[in-house]
Structure formats: structure tokens, C-alpha cells
Length: 362
Image (cartoon, rainbow, N blue to C red; front, side, top):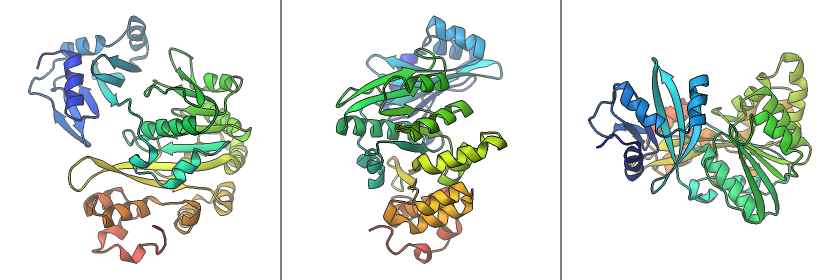
């Protein structure tokens, strides 16, 4: 394979890969169904990687990389598709990772989400969070939710992204997509300004700092629907993270705001299928009722999982309940179930019947 970035990206897509990795003293590698594979046997030296990466950057992006030593950006390659790029320095060498972003926004049902996630799209105010590790499909879920809202409601949707991944089309809603770095200087500033732009729905691709979280909570309290993502593995840790980012003297106010404005948390993971044909979604969904809101106010987060287990009528699902369904349907292996579960002992036994909730799946 010729050392051309377009060819590497095209090969990534043609093989069904999700990410392309370019590193010094290693061949170009692609992630397929969660596993890393080399694209060829050609080892790239630091200069080759540098040239491949710099070929994808504008002059202003090169200047930002030189100053900041790392860069997030979107890359559109004609005839190939759209990618989210991250350039960084490793042992003094320029390296990069490129995430392929299909522009066909899937429906929520096809992603494997529960009906309650569709119900979140009917809300007119409050905070809904989509969480998970990098590569767990948060951006896809968020785009799918925005598409559902735009198709079924009338209003203005403002998205704040870094970078813009999915290109969203106007439907019944007017959609304004703003990119940090090219359309605005920061999430917090753009979020503050968005409140003056007549929004019905505000989408924040990542709540990274105290100011962004504070403004998002205020927006959710004052009649806007706010959708956002966080890098947290489950619902209790998501709540803990939102509170802990604030100084101790400010936490009581934040807890009160969160207890009243939080409408849902979707924590998702992509687990390899048992048949080796891709990955399947496992998700934890929190729908705060009276009991869970009290737990948030009193910061008794250790009680939330128990309330979720018995709160299935409200739409609550724990990650272990989701994994149990996938295991019973033979979609994942027991080894994967154990690895991804919260309480591994449930799945280490020959059967998972002892902890199977009687009415969870009805």
C-alpha cells in the first residue's frame, strides 16, 4: 500500500474499521469490532507519520498543534467519508487516531436502546446525559436522539461540538451546529451565549469543565432540554462526577439543581458479539423518580443501584440486567458478561437465574 493518508482511510472504511491509528515505528493499524489489526506490514518511521498527519491539516490547525501539542478536528475525505481526528505527541513524535463517522444516522431502536430512551426525546426541559468510555457510541446515540427530536418536534436545536461529527439536516426543527475552535472559543462561552439564541434544545458534545456543567444545569432548570455526554461508566459515578468537579462550598447548590433537573442517564457499552460479527449495545438507564431524587439530594448514591433494580416500571435498567438479557439471548459470551458487569459473581455461576428479576423484561 502506498503511503497516502487517503488510501489508509479508504482501507479502514472498506474493512469495516472504526478507527485508524498512525504511530511511529509501527504499521498503520485499524480497529475492527474492538480489535486492533495492522493494515499492512510497512513500518512507518516518525517522518512518514508526520507527513501523513500534516497532510490532513489546514495552516491554522498546524499552528494550533504547534502551540497546544494536540488537536481535535473533523476531516472530510471526498469519496471516503467523514472522520474525527486527534493528533498528539508521543515520545516527541507526531501521531494520530482517526474515527470514522458514518453520516447515516441510525434510528434509536436499531442501536438497541430501550423504549425509555425514545421517551427522553419527548421531554421539553431537563438534563439527559449519555455516558460511557471512548468508543462506546455516545456520539451516535446523541445524533440519533437529535434526529428523533428534529423529526417529531418544532423548534430550535443548538449543538456545541468539538469537533462536529454528524452533519444534521433541518427537519421540523431548525438545527444550528457550532464547532469549538472554528465557530466559538469554548463550550462554556458558547453555552452561555446559546441561552440568548432562542433554543428549545441544547446539545453539548462533552461537559468538560465546571463552568459548562454549571450553565448546563441552569439551562435545564429554566425550561430547556439539555442533552450532553460524559466519560463515566455508570449512573452513580456520573452523578458523583458532576458534583465532585465543584468546590465543597458549592456542592450543596449543585446537588439541589441536579436532583430537580436531571431527567435521565444512559450509560452504554459496546460488547463483542458471541458470533464475532460486530458488537452489541449494553446500557444502564436511570430515570429518576422520587426515591432516586432523594438519594441525590442526600448524596446516598450507594442506594441508587438498588432503586434502579426495582424501578423497571419507570424505565430503569441496570447494566447487569442489560447484560443478563444479552447473555440469555446468546448474543455475548459469559466471559464478556463477567468482564463488563458491575457484580461479576452474578455471572460467574453456571446460571444467572438467582439474580434474574422476575418482571424486568416485560
